Image (cartoon, rainbow, N blue to C red; front, side, top):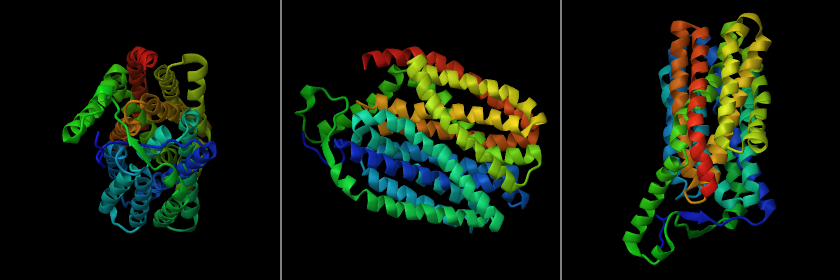
Length: 435
């Protein structure tokens, strides 16, 4: 078979565990920093609203623009990451996100929607290449652990974002938060490019993979063979989705995005509104959530290994856990800030555990015959489409119906997602038995 740059080149797998560990640490650092340039808007949103720069619906529109373009970017970059250098894509994503953060501190209110949309598209260029590196470049014995451990970037990065925002808000204007975060991302882009020099050479592209090609087809040459290979690869992705029950998961994936990112985006404003706190205090209190959320990823891993032995069944249990917490949340809102934060922590921790499965473990497990980055890209895009609709919808819901009704809608999301996970469990079990 004649190969060219348009075929899907698998990366050569690292055989040195130390190199694999170094690659993981670099990916961890990159994704950690990406959160600093993501949730800083959520941390300062209360201040922006207090200064009447945006309405509630307008503030939600900024988050919606981010999440929507992040979702679009996940689809585009998920497939593109199989054909371009993951190292270059991560560098470009960090660079673009850093510049967008710098611009966010200067633009007028209407411009915030466009700039934050650009930020979402650029940040979407980071995760699919990381999944490709995990699936193809990491030693196989390090893959599952990497998929679980990388989720610690979510609470750690969110915590760092709120911490930076809280500090900057006490000494300067909200604009400075974006400038500090943008500068941090630009510095990280340069560090990534320099630190991966040896790894880029160690994982030079190996012979292109033929994901679903039969042995007798390897002799085909020219455009016909290349077209058939592309068609089989694309068809294989959707065939896998149907066979493994992943099509049933698209709605739960979207709803978990609504609960994970949509809710998290509004936590500082929620605390500030429900308990009449200052913007700096609400951002500081919200820092407690990421400290607890990390347990969600390891809880999901423990439940799967010890009890369920099925990733989708594990997700169903976590959705039910979140539903219980959300039923109790309206009562807690009337009585105690501590109880409210505990229930929010239970909800967001469950969502982080589910996220670990949906965009990390599941794509890598299913990615032996199909590009894992493409699987993760589709699922992550679905996650952020759900987050986009939720972020805007929460603003409208609170404006028109109040927080109690909004929380009950969140409960409905969790309950419906659990039902759809139940429908997908058997297909996933059968897939694992025959894969």
